[in-house]
Image (cartoon, rainbow, N blue to C red):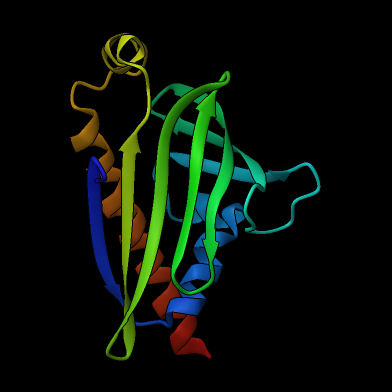
Length: 157
């Protein structure tokens, strides 16, 4: 079970949305926290085991993570595990379900940090008192931006 899950109905095909999300170099366009991502080790797109580095920012704090794709099922699911200095941090997933003329996109987050790290990381390092609420807000913003981007692109084609 995800620790947090948010969904949004988007007037675009599940394949188009998968392609937008699965190309992690786009993530800076809609995430309020991720500013950029780049594929590593010759990877050029979503595939099981492909790795990428994410650059992130929250207020004045900046950090990067290394991510590994754990699900790359076109038009259905894209997921990746996140590590920081080799420590498991989280799993993020996007699921796509056709609905009418569009698609319901569900973004989910599963906490993977060790307990000792959660206590130090959230309040002391990141200044976040409620990680689930913080991520829920970010996920809502991400999916709203993804919706705006995808629906605008769809209306122009």
